Length: 287
Image 1 (cartoon, rainbow, N blue to C red):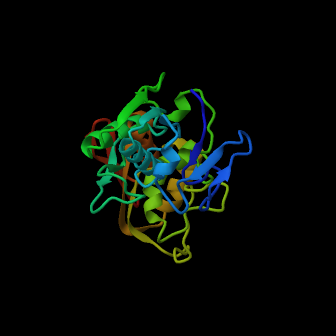
Image 2 (cartoon, one colour):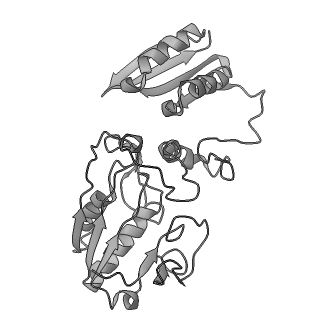
Image 3 (cartoon, rainbow, N blue to C red):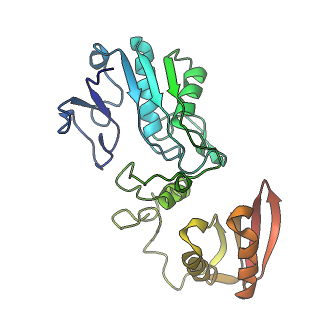
């Protein structure tokens, strides 16, 4: 197989850009680079004319409004129309393939809402390609090269591979895990872009130190480590009103029971409201 052209998604061919990209020439290989995040989002027929196949090899992060699956779908449809083979070199979903969370898409598809799937869809890009090819009737000549050595319950930090940023602000597994929730708030608050830990911190000028909360709903970032987690919980649960409460969803294997005991010791009475498939809903009140 000869590589004769490259197509770049949002963030460029190496995931390092944070702006629209023009067609260019790759400095390392000398190959032409056709941008799919500039004047077009889909390969043009003339760009595919001399190709036998399109090969898709990009790391996703498992969230519906991350744009790489949208680029995958656009390329898959273009390959089908041009009668070209489409090959996906599949990769693990870094935030696991078992948890499926968040609302389904309501309304029409877009570049940040590419199919009727939950926000955290739990699929690999190979699985996305198979699903969309079938459900939209593309009829593409699709081959998925399966990812090896990954079980659906595994997160990226269990695979023994170094983290490589798939985009400039996706700098850690913690950021990828938080992104499906934190990204929803970006129109209203700062989500840490421009800091060393995008999507791991949030801020808003109108949330001053004297603001108290009647309710806090949270899926706590357990994987940030016990010290950081405890510091974060004490800071925010301490700002509940006298009659306020916090509802938190924590998996049993991530320490929900020990967290409940620790909160009780801190003078924050906590009870388990419900349990399903290993997840606990904890309710915490001011002491």
